Amino acid sequence: MSNVGHYGSSTSTSLMSSALSSLAEPEPKLVDGIALDYLLIELVQTLRQSTLVATSKLRAREKEMVDAGLIPPTPPIPPSKKESKGKGPEDDEEEEALRIRLESIGATVGGNVAERLSKDRARFQDTLDTIKFVCKEVWAAVWDKQVDNLRTNHRGVYVLQDNAFRPLLRVSSASGSADALSKARIYLAFSSGVIRGALARLGLYAVVVPETTTLPQCTFQVKLPKAFNHFTTPA
Image 1 (spheres, helix red, strand yellow):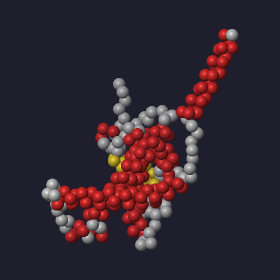
Image 2 (image 1 turned 90 degrees about the horizontal axis):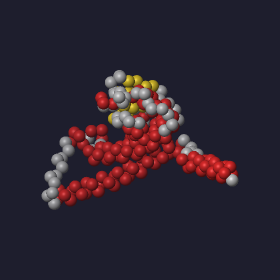
Image 3 (image 1 turned 45 degrees about the horizontal axis):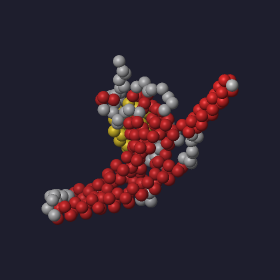
Image 4 (image 1 turned 90 degrees about the vertical axis):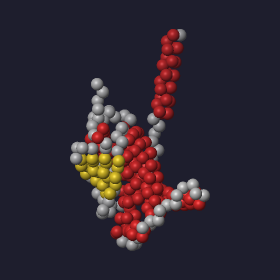
């Protein structure tokens, strides 16, 4: 009886372990890699419209407060600034609001991707090891390739270069390459957020600045505060 009881207990334990294991690590559900490209296109357009509505409401509230004498009126913008690059200050404000929202969404995505990819690996040895992980593992998971070049000044600044960055491969404009380059920059906001979010989840809080001068090439400058230039090991 004791043997039978022991056998039954062992079997139920193994079955329970198998069931719990399948719940803890379910098989991944995959989608076509092109889905992210289409999602980013729609995301930019949708958030652009949403940002226009949000900023219009904000200006309306500010006008009401000015009319009520609660806040001083906004000083007029000099004509030289109104005509710069064919854009007014309102356009710059809306573009910045759109950039912030895209980067915030990208940071959430990047953090979750980095956490999933790093959960079974050993602790990173130093800052450079963490940066390399983003350049290889995170880059390949999100954009199907690794970074083409990584440079650093060994003082907390890293430059990540991609010669054919996937989100920029299909960017074009009927008005020419200069206009396409100008429009492409907003699509890098989401990607900057992915990099910043991945690094933050791995313990590095950085400022990520994207730059592109020739499509589809781009670089991301990652700036770390001095406190994070190297990992400190516990005593």
